[in-house]
Length: 380
Image 1 (cartoon, helix red, strand yellow):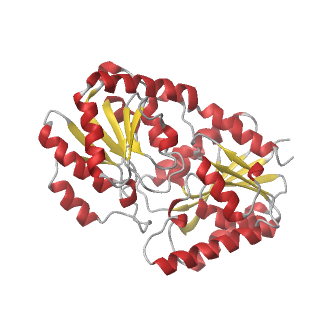
Image 2 (cartoon, helix red, strand yellow; image 1 turned 180 degrees about the horizontal axis):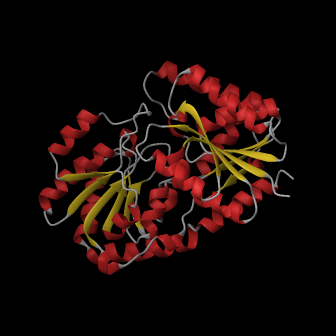
């Protein structure tokens, strides 16, 4: 009999974009799937709830807001997870972010539930932000917390790049044998189309609007490029993430956009449609990425890619084959790489074709799903 898989998510929008396809495949194999999630004050949350339920997936929404620092709210979330874990013993708790793992490990410790911790990048919990003393103190507490609980909890890890695998092993004092490496979250390749005939002179950046995603570097580079190449369109897709301390300041973003020719198109529910028309995609990130799904999507849609030589981003492309790697925090290198692709259409098309081929070979959701099943079966 298959075990019940309980996904623990900070918020439903992330689950839908990164794990829903996995959950559907689990259902098709006879697994019972439940999602426990908090809220994030997103406009499209209700649509996501309806979508998840329409797939036959049990959904439990707790009155806990992702990103909150309210201890009572966090404890309410934890108590609900403990309650769900105690309902039967034949289950695996699958935490799909670092923050959900903090809650999930505590619940697993109390209920003796087997747990999987998936990290799509280590994010701001392992990235210096603000006061240096506070950062070191926070990291010290996180290390102690995980190291203590992992002595008593049966746990497996899933990460998306080799550096994160090594960091998890070193930081939490666990064997690399219990850490599985996947190439991102995968995509349903049939949902993404590469058609050179619909490509336009469009450069696109899409991400959460965090400073460390390279938003202002992109705006600076695009401002210079748009003055030189007025027949090209420069788009920025995504919304500020107010729950993150790294969120762009809205007023500053507006000022920078007013002085540029970048068109901010906000959140795109069907990003693949925008990607299909873009010749060039860029993610100039220096965030602690895992394996950015948007780079997988851009590859599948046949975009020439410009991204940074940082963990996660560099794992998604072969430099010079299906994209160009640049140094992080450099608007000048970003400008030069995009200009190179604008001026050399044959190079851009060659990289685009190889991007699409690379995606077909490496980024199928089926490959990621097989790794998940192996992890679940390792508890038997």
